[in-house]
Image (cartoon, rainbow, N blue to C red):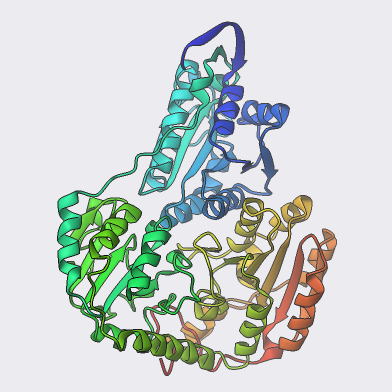
Length: 556
């Protein structure tokens, strides 16, 4: 634990709290329990971190996940052991899917009874194995003396690309144990490894790109740190398209941006005439490539820190293993002043973007004005958080335009119910900024208790609930694939304005675009949270029913 100061002792719980302070994170999230109380007691006594008491471990982990994505630093969630750790499992899977640097600290029963199946309260069989399966890595602290070193290593692994959640279980007796106060250096933030690309592989990529006249850059979540070189390539004449996770790396208002319209028909048609595609930090996920049927430019290169990323589904002529920012910077350096871009390419890119966006809006029917109303209210500094619901799958994942990669958060793993807690984490990561959150009524039901957390923290969140009183996408799938036989998709939906008012959150019911515009204008004068319950039946139906990915919008 570092050179000790002989006369002073602290608990392991306090040592962990001091280590968290050293990472630069300002918030931690969780649910207090008898099996994590030494850590939370130390956090409370020291007062250096803001601890947000969620109503459930799943919500707490979602909050920490979104906090990390928006703040660009480590997220921290603290749970109990056993059932408490298990409750966080789905949210940890989401963090792993999104590549979020997240530290999950969980308690554990007393060391003397570990792995003995003795029925100890909060015991779970092979909890470490469960955590290893759903986390990037998982560790058990076995002695008090090893605690700081183990947690430091977990933080380093979480922050090292490909980033992800790392779990650490600490037995309750170890948390309570006294240890000599370590040297302050032991509490310094560990340094994440940055993998520099091999110069020969970047040189080969420069040679391959040198003659390209219609090149495209596809940016994913692994390239969030690569905005500067990506913008340089855009200024050279490259078109830029992004996955949902890579939105805003190049501002979506940029003339070179195809935003996240990569699967739209006009963009696929543009790809047919492109002579190079460079993919940086993206897995080209199935729901963003029409189930891997999207026709990409034939000549392709991939930049990724993970050796296993190569040729997962799509094949590549060139592969550069390393940090996306460094690799793209080397590519931009090698190409500066040398490219001979087709003079018609820029106008073709703009036309493809306009056609794709126009087709999307046409598919929305009366909800096109709903989307436009939100766009008009959404400011360049606001944050856009989305759950998995029809409105997000159609327009929320593409509109409104984002200006930076830390401006948007989406449930990448496809699980519902994560939007509200993610909004809480995002708001704490972006103080002074408004967080707009688009969720469905079915998803909100899963995390409804976190309205209490939102009210308690008094955060500037505008929660827009697209309420169709059930699982709308399931109904559409049943109509399309199961002969219209609808089972189990209709839900008893609470009156969300009443529920919000019960925890002293301002709320309104929305019946159309005009009432939404009025409510959004009204909400600007409210410092705390607001819930807007949108009656989708009162507005009408989408022009094209969304029945799950992969799908191409009509006319696109």
